[in-house]
Image 1 (cartoon, one colour):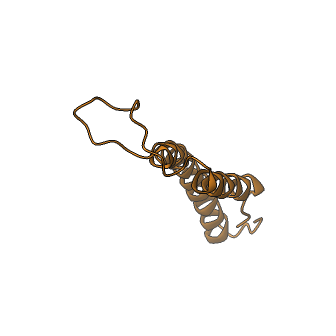
Image 2 (cartoon, rainbow, N blue to C red):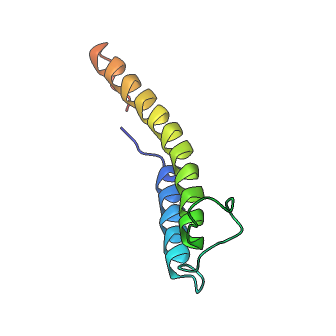
Length: 85
């Protein structure tokens, strides 16, 4: 089974973004404006990491669908005698 380069590129972008979020000068500052007055106040990095995780979750779902499609295609070809992977 061939793994598409775009999946690795997405992972690399996510890891780079994670490092920039954690390494930002304001990463550990409290963001008082992001939530209501009665809610716990998150750090700026927590908000950014939440956004990153939401993005990754969407991409992982797409990745898993592509991976499963490729896997099923490979198995189908293998068991039907046509081995073009």
